[in-house]
Structure formats: C-alpha cells, structure tokens
Length: 414
Image 1 (cartoon, rainbow, N blue to C red):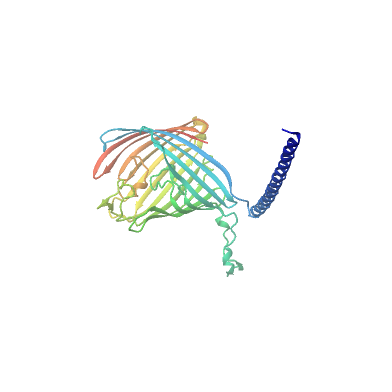
Image 2 (cartoon, rainbow, N blue to C red):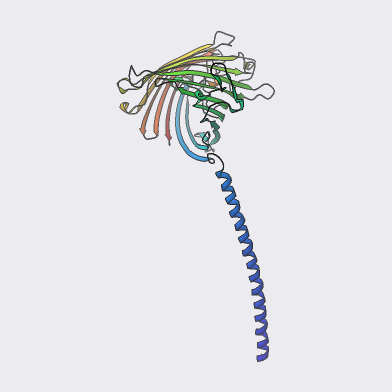
C-alpha cells in the first residue's frame, strides 16, 4: 500500500475516533448531570421525611424488646373412657415482639408453633398467639370534649377529674387473659388469649391497700345463621398487705361476673366437655358469678399461698350449677432450692361453667372432681422443669370414669 493511502486511512480513523469520543463523552456528561439531579431530589425528599417524622410527638414506632420460649412436654394419660393409655410428646415455640408507638400506646405481637411428635415428620402448625394495642394514658385530667361544668359545691371547675384512673390499660385485639385467677388456676374461665377489648386498672390507695378491676367484651364463636356467641365479663378485687403478721403477707379477694351471650340453644364450642345438651345444643344459659380469695405469707422466709374459688351459674336450668376449688402452695424461693409445690382439689358440676373454658384436674371440662399436685424446679437461669400428677373422675354421657395423668414440661425462656 502506498504511503498516501496509509495516510488517508490514518486520517479517516482519527476522524472517526474523535467523533465517537465526542459523542460518548457528551452522553456520559448528560447521564452524570441526570444522576446528580436525581440525587439532589432524593436528598430533598429525605430531608422532608425527617422533618415530618421529627414533628410527630413522642417519635415513631420503635421495637422495645422481644421474648422467646420453648417447651417440650411429655404426657401419659390413663382415661377409663378410652380403650388404651396415651403417650404424647409435644413441642412448642413462641416469639413475642414489644413495640412502642408513642408514650401512651404499645403494640404486642406474638406468634407460635407447636407439634405432636411422631406424625411422619410433618411441619409444625403455626398461629398468631397475641396481636393487640395497649393504650395507657399518661395524663388524665378531664374529658376535653366536655369542657367545664358547674360543681354545685365548689363552683365552676372541670366537670370530671380522672386522676384516679391513672394506671388504666385499654386493650384491643387478641391479648392475654386480663383477669385475676387465684393460684393461677383456670378453674372458672380459662379463656387463654381472648379476642375483643378489655380494660385493666390498678390503684394503690395507700402503702397497704391496692384495688384492681378488669372488664371487657369478647367474640367467642361466630355463627353463620344465628347471632354470634359472646362473652361479657367484669371483675373487681383488692389486695391488703398485712405486714403485722410476717413480711410480704397479704390477702387478695374479689368477685367476677361472666355472661355468655347467645349460647343457650347453640351448637358446642369445640365439644360440650361435660355441659348438658339437648339435640346437640347447649341446654342452658351461662351467667356465672365467681368469688375468690388468696392469702400469702413469707413467715420464716418461706412463701406460702392458700387460695380458693367458688362459682355458681345463676341461669342454669338444673341444680348442677356450682363448683369450688381449694389449694395451697409453696412458691419458688432460693431457700427452697428454687422448688415450687402446689396442690389443689376441685369439684365442678355439669353446668357451673362453660366446659370449653375450664382447665382442671380431669383433662378440662365440667362434671367431675379431682386432685392435682404440681412440682417445679428451676435448674438453671431461665430454665424450669415441672411435673404434674392428676387423679380424678369425670362423667360424660351419664357414664362416670376414672382419670389419671402425668405430665412433664421442660421450658426455656429468654
């Protein structure tokens, strides 16, 4: 190739390279300028969002803590109503999250999963255990929308002074049982984690007296063609400290009212569990009055509890309408090598309470009696083993049978 042709090729390549460089460079400059504008927009949006969040009183939702627990349970049951003895192994795990919306509103959410071992390695069943809002007003002076009214004794003043309601918690959603049960017994209404709304209130009157109250309304059973079954409940009580006897001595007493709406003439909640039925429907209504008492003391530095429960269904159509429970226990204490012991005896007639919500000494339900002995031991931090022994008798379909059960629980929590 002649030197002139080589020169033409080189000049052509140089021109093409220059044009490409200028074109690519201009495109890159355009993209950089566009990215810089987008970045500036994002910065402005971020600044505006921060200003908006900072303007919210008390800040925004924050996760304040969580809890984990795991339980392994072994249960042996000898029920004369069944053909064979039963041996069950179960595991359960739960995780709870606690959050704060602001200074007066908290959120709680807990999920769990459980499984009966030995079913071909099937997956665990999961559920939402708790999901609720807890509103606890920090400042209660008067109802602002009512303004001022006339107090005929003291003249013009706020129409309501709600300072006495400090300590109130208003719950909505699916929450833990808001009612007090002496000896942690589920004898009258073991409602677990009910769904609805409730208020819980405690007030220290002085150094020796505390009063408390709980009330609420709960959805129990949805009915497709009839009015839903509901529960309306109210509890009041008081704790009187008795330092004149021994350190940490007290007596707690109170009364509860549980009104189950739209239950008579309805199908069973789960099963009847000892309640009488007609045509596979509840025979009677359930308007339950409950009185309870618990006495505790720490004489000689050993915590002891005595407790009792009495219940009557005022709407029962038969005489099978009453029940009672008595018990005592040694609470967990270092002097007792972190051992706790509890014993209770109970008798409950067929229609004293709703059987689906009675946890007792003969596998739940009503129309029976029995003894329960429980021993627990904290063998390390956040780890407890508990053994319970139950012996009793129950009546189902007019047939009385004996019932014996041993359960071992190994629980970890942190």
